[in-house]
Image 1 (cartoon, rainbow, N blue to C red):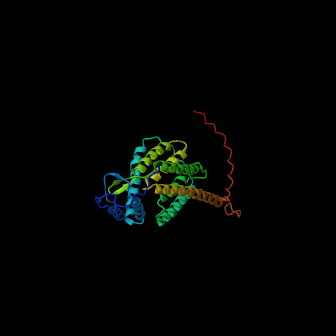
Image 2 (cartoon, rainbow, N blue to C red):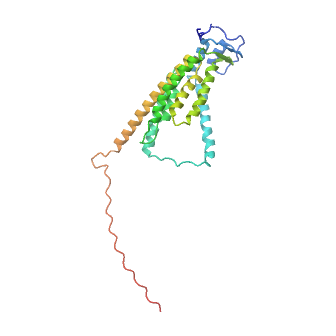
Image 3 (cartoon, rainbow, N blue to C red):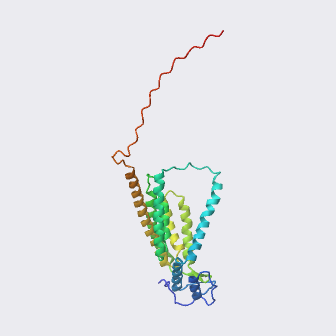
Length: 296
């Protein structure tokens, strides 16, 4: 028995008009699709238009400003709330690093994230650029004793997650959509993605981090997609971003470490030789104690 195709006949999903949304690109899509409270097989063309509208939002200044505000609020709340709560908890003493190690770390994350952000904003069709930035922030380490275990586990786990994503999408089959405010939502993909996300949170506390990455990769792909094809594309972009981010982090770390070692190496001309300290004069021997005079 053959599986019905994902693309049903084109046409409006419902006859009732949808309420006007806040963003113009999605307004055009809603006007063409309509709104309905039930579940239906929404046209694949409508889902494609939604995906294109979301790409256009990445070039919209108002949209990017609101995203920055939401990220700022989400980041500032823990900064304000957590320190008073953590004061009463026992904490390990912080690991200290030299000034040179801190400078290398700052240069790596600032340089790679800045270049990556500008690149992905200039290529709006690459919608998974945040995966690259996250890989850089997570994998960059401070100090000279670098451990690459996390890097290898992240790459291998993401490769395994791509295989899991392919199997899951094949098992899910035809993507069906549920109308929510005139926008067709692939709720089956989202529910399966939530299940994988919950499992990934549990696996996060496991010593085998590759399990976490193997579960979070399909969860992130399915919860940010509108079609099975888009979920596969997001998974592939996540894999590429993790591999490229890992390679760049390793290369940048090795370059900065080697550069600092060369800068600290003596030049041989005597200019960097330590200044000799003058010899300490010998301490004279202590004088014998004078007896006290007899008391009268």
